[in-house]
Image (cartoon, rainbow, N blue to C red):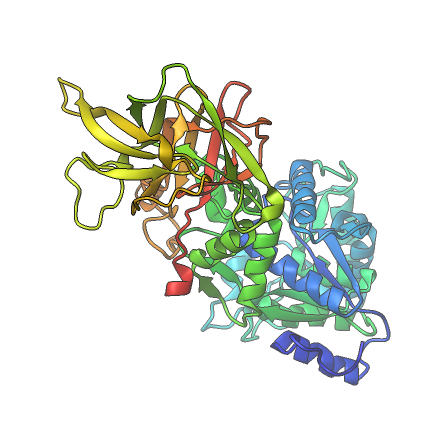
Length: 559
C-alpha cells in the first residue's frame, strides 16, 4: 500500500496509521484483533468494533484476529464462544483460521508475571478486595501503599509459586504491579494483575487456579500474536498507559499500539452487556435473540441482513467519542438493502371480510402480479382471486374523512392486480355494532393488465382470498425503551423503563399462499405494511409467524 492516504481513508485512525507507516514504526504487516470475553452475546456496538478492526486490516492488506479473552472461568462458557464465531461469520467479518484463545497463552503470561517480580515490578499482596479498593484512593485523592508492597523479590517469587500450586484460598492473595500509588491515573495505582480463582475452566480444566487480569493479559497476547494496532473503544483510553507500561517493562520491541475510537450507542435500546443481561435474566425480553434487542442474534432474528448492518456502520463513519445514533438510521439501511432484493406479498394483518356478490359462486382465477417493481429479475407470481376476500380493516371507513381514498359506502377502489370493487352494503354485529363484513360488487371490465382505460379511481388496496390464503401471526415492533436514551442508573425499574408497545402480537392475520412454504429467516415486503421476516423461534409446520423488520416509512432522511 502507498504511504499516501487512500480515498475514503481520511479519518483520524487512518491518519495515525499512515504517519506510522511513513515513520516505519513496524517492520511486520498490519494485524488487528477483536478480543471478546465469552460471557455473553455480541451486539451492534460489538459489530462496530469488529468492523473497525476488520476493515482497517483489509485496507492495509493485513490480518484480522479473533481472540477470546477467556481468563475468568467463573463467567465464560463454550456456548458463547460458538455463538460469537457464528455471529462474526454471519456479519461477514470472518477471521478464517485466525481464531485464538487467551487461555492458550497461560504459560507465557505467567512467565511475564515472574519477569516483573524478578525486576521488582510486581509483588504479592494480602489485602482483601475491599482493602485494595480502599487503599487505591479516589479520583481526587491519591492512594496509599500496601503494607506488603516492599516484600523481597525472593518472597514474592515463592508466594506467587504457591499461588500457582493452589496453596491459598480465593481472594486471599493477589499479584499487583508496582507502579505509582500517587498517579493521577487510577489504573496505574498498583493494579491487580493476577488473582486466585478455584474453578474449572472450559478449555484448560483445573490446570490453573490463578488467572491474569485483562489489562495485564491483553498487551502480552497482542505482542505474542504480532498485533500492530489494538483498536478499542474510548472507555479503554485511560487504560492505555498500563498497556504501554506492561509492554515496556517486558522489553517488547515494536510493541503493539493501543488506539481508541468512539463507542456506538443506539437510541431506544441498551448496548451495555450488564443491562442486556438484566433484561434477559429478568425475563423482560424473549431471550438474547429477542428482536427488540440490539444483539446480533436479535437483529438477525428480526430480519436485519449483514449487508444492512455493514452499510449502517459505513454510513456512521469513524467516531472519536461516545455517541448515540438514531436507530432510524439503521432502519433506513435495512430498507435500502431489502427494497430491490425481496419479493412482495399481500398480507392482511387485521382482516375484514368482503363478499363480492356478483362474482360467480365457486369461480376462481389466477392473477399475475409483479414480485418486485424495482427488480424484474424477481419475476411474477400467480395469486388466486375468488368471491370472498379479506381486506385491511383500516382500508374501509364508514364515514370517510377528507382525503380518505380507500373503500367506503358507495365508493370504488382497485384491488391490486385485480378489479374495481364498490361497497354496496355494510354488515354489523348486532350486539356490538362492529363492522364484520362488506358486501361489494365488482366490474369485470376493469381487470388489471387488460388495457382498461375507462373511469379512474384514486385508491388501490391489497387483499387476500379467504379460501386460498394462509393464517399468519405478526409481531410488530417499536422502540424497546420509553426513553430514547438508555438508562444510566445502577438500579433500574425495567418494568417501567420498557415501552409497553415495544412488541404487539397480532394473531390470525391472512397472507396469500406461497408456491414454496417460507423458511425461517426468509424475508418479504408486505404490500403497504413494510418488510417482514419469518421468525425462527415460533414458526412451526402448522403456523407462520412473521417479525416486522421495519415499516415502509423512512423517517431518518427527513430529520
